[in-house]
Length: 233
View 1 (cartoon, rainbow, N blue to C red):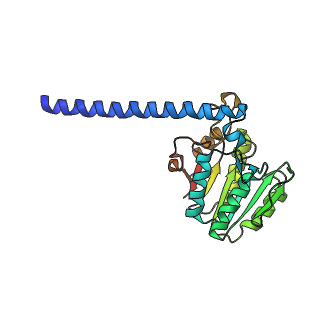
View 2: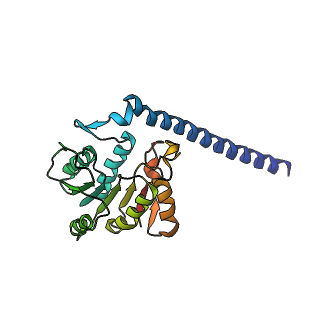
View 3: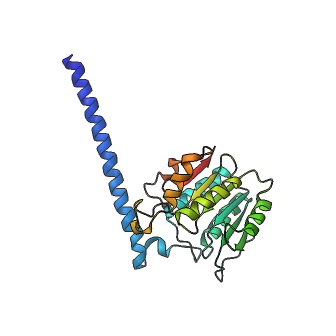
């Protein structure tokens, strides 16, 4: 009995050490995440990220994940909500060039000047929820076997949730709806933001059974999109 109890004690101690290590690991990652995120206020890190000279405003950890995903998924169509200056659209279009297939449709309510031009990019100006925009996307997605959706515009909870409910229809089985900037509102950055993408994801997943959160896309410790890589079953 004494020997068995010792084995149990050792096992319990090992589990405790593993748990404490995970806690410490998460704490260090979160501290770096906060420092990295806030540094954009001082002209550093993601706030000054560029791709081929165009402002992109992404964590390099996530852009690396994106290239892995595009290689795996070989999308015929990428739908991006939130163009900004077109840096991410150019990055994705360049990756599609490597595979010699696919196009990206990107939407923003602001038509920023001097956006990069590329034969695989279509820019649309307007609300991502406007019927005329959705009508164009319906036509673009028709007959496509691999469609990826990226939501990166208005980050308020209600807007993101509405987008998720609508744009899920474009995502093909096995592909993804990526909800960006779910790190705000204290997850772990910008706690003053208020309910945002993270909370929208929580609400969406309570009732939706078609998608699952792919935590494997967060394996570089830090992502702007925690719980935001949603794979369609």
